Length: 245
Image 1: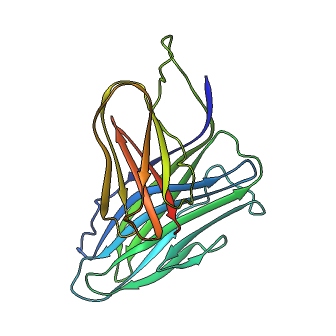
Image 2: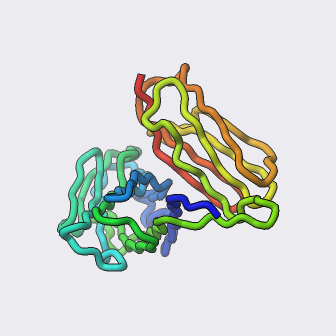
């Protein structure tokens, strides 16, 4: 049995992904996590796009406190839009987008200090156009994080999907990617830039069950932030990576 720090995320949309007035699209993308034994920060990346032909103003709001309720002395949360963040105590933020503009730096940031234990965190949010407040999208973000057992069957093969933290990260010339598959199947591992463009495919094919390792060589990439995404079976995993040259 292997003990790993595992992070899984589920996005649940309780409305159509586009406003009824066709003014915004809202696309939760992935979860980014940085953690150690003393504290943790998780970031839910989101793309919000003004799909209308004029400038619009939108509001992002928390509908309630996270579940379970976290001590504010040890817990922070906040919205970030266009690189500006408003943290704990701020229930909502308002921002504007020009016609056709996409805010690719929109995210929910959550963090806490203290010992990390197995837990499930639920955060309910709402986004709406200020001109059409009845046209809203509610999204529930569910984060499962903690020290998780990765069981093996009698043959020594893992019984769960997992993507280990890439190492090193930040990295210079190359970094190593390790993942496990409980059953044989098609697996895709790809690299994306901060604008959501896929810039490299590291793996795309059939893999046997077991442990696998890939090496990312970044000689042709510029310094900056990148996102690693793995699709295996019905599972999806994402990680944030920083290339420093």
